[in-house]
Image (cartoon, rainbow, N blue to C red):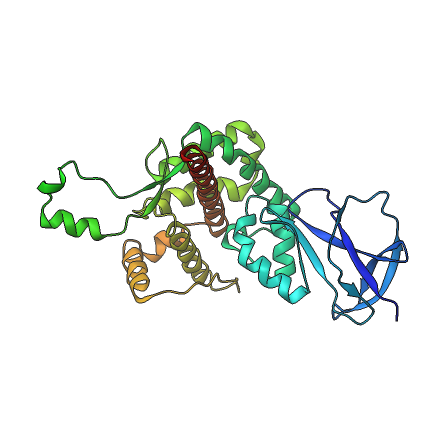
Length: 318
């Protein structure tokens, strides 16, 4: 049986991140794999590389009919990652939250992995993903102008070391938390400023109901989240989304699961006590999903800026 060497990959979209098409070579000619419904290679189809944007591969892997088909992606972590479908699913599921700034690629990953993030709840059409892409593209400019950043919650004492009291020492033992902040103080104020910024840039956002309802959802929900801990914002908002979806019991909606420790269960119980079901039910689930999307993008952008600044500081110190 003829063996086909893995020659490289082609990106049909000619952009990254994207899924890649494996290219095989045999006797100086090039092929793509044809797959059956079980993702096995059932044959190879001859192609021309002239019109393809190809990335050459330096491996010696060979494939033949009956082998597991391979799938590839290009993302910010690697120019090429390729595996069988099940193994690539595992890789993509571990990275999927990093793709929220590229909603159309996220959509492909979500379909491939059969996985939905709360940031994209309610997205049903390409228009829904396009609106998120438009909003996502605005966040770097907003973050720069409004000094969106991650800072430590630990405040250094003004006292000299020898003047520290026992209470100060106990306080110092507590681990500082990374908090999301901006020139506007609270997360709610930051969201409100971003909403105004976005609709001033793109008037057509007024035509999209989930983005419009996100402002009311943000007002009701973010005012009840006291801390801007970057590791807790998303969990708190996702828990509220789940609770809201349970109230919509007439519809069988997807739930977004994450593990709750005993401490977290107490935290959520206390949070729920601040509202009654009427207040929760007035929060629009699709609008709340948009709040999760925007705040997750805030965190993503602030983390990237922080890493960039740390890299610059590291280079300067050397």
